[in-house]
Length: 123
View 1 (cartoon, rainbow, N blue to C red):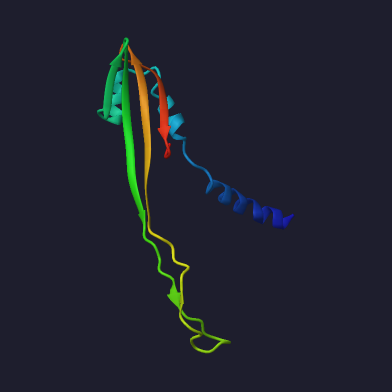
View 2: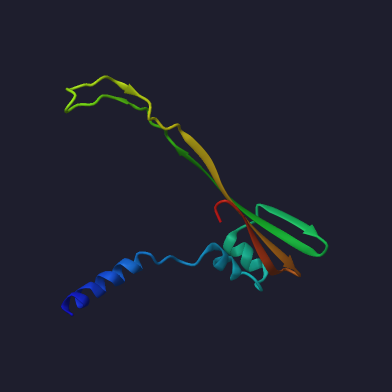
């Protein structure tokens, strides 16, 4: 029983580490039904704006570029085979560059947010 009492706080702390805030979709859903002025005041001026058939679309684009340097595989083995058992080459990893993007598009009618959509690989 004593072990259970001691383990309970540790379990609570470890589970608290997994807690995360609301998702992007949950955050953006808070703008539905709100006026355009609130959207612009909190998210800033949209990156794109288009008006089609009585509906205005605001698009906010978040883009980030990532680069991971590669590695070069060169070295030798020591130990059982002697201090250097021949150089070896290979096992390297190439450099990698990629872009993460998320576009959040809001549909507004009569200057009130009606809906939103998320698109991209980082939403």
